[in-house]
Structures are given as structure tokens and as C-alpha cells.
Image 1 (cartoon, protein in one colour):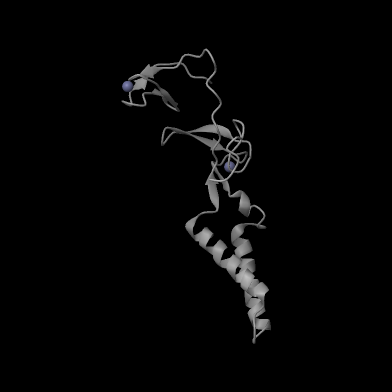
Image 2: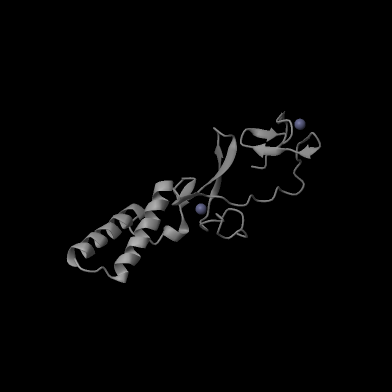
Length: 145
Ligand SMILES: [Zn+2]
Ligand SMILES: [Zn+2]
């Protein structure tokens, strides 16, 4: 994983955008949403592909077609560089490696706020409430927000 693992809480460690913590009620897990409300964003290294990676890929294909049509005898190093870029990007688009789940560090639990314990461990605060990390039992307890 590339990105800034030392990003402050509320900033995605992959793309550096401000994100807010949201509840995934299906998984009962926390997720992080960007300003557009989505929990995924484009990979930062593809952000320069205008207007979007798929259109950019189509543009590469068009340039290769034009080069092949114009030069019947030999193709230039630029053509092969375009072909390599096309192949690499096409593969990433096919396997869905162009998006990432926003992820941010969680703000520290406020000092002095009580934490629910069970089975000898501090519990885990899920969207539905405190849960034991060991036995999974729902625990009573105060929430931060
Ligand atoms: Zn992100
Ligand atoms: Zn327990």
C-alpha cells in the first residue's frame, strides 16, 4: 500500500482527501466517505488521466490505430510506448485496480471516556454498539459521538 500512513485522522492515507467516518450497517463496520459521499475513490496515480481512465484508454487505442494507418512499413518507439501504456492500463481496468477504499486512522478514544471490557479485552465499538473482540457479545457502554 502506498500513500501517507502518517496522515492525520480524517484524511485518507491513500489519496490524502478529507474523509468522514460512516457506518456500513450491512457489515456493522466503519467506513470512510469522501466529499462526494462515496467510500471509494480513484487511485491517485490515475488521477491525471483525463477525462477518466476508460476514455483515456480509448484515446490510446485511437492513437495506435492512427499510427498503424499512417505508417505501413515501421512503427516508431512512441508507438510501442503507447502500446505498453495501453496494455498496462487495460489490465488494471479489467481487474478493477483503479479504485481504492478510503481509509483513515481513527481519532484516539477521548481520554477519560469509559471503554467496555469483556473476556479480558477492551471491546470494539462497531456502528451497532460495543462488541467483545473475543466472544462477540454485545456490551453496554457509552459512545463517543
Ligand atoms: Zn482515499
Ligand atoms: Zn466476551
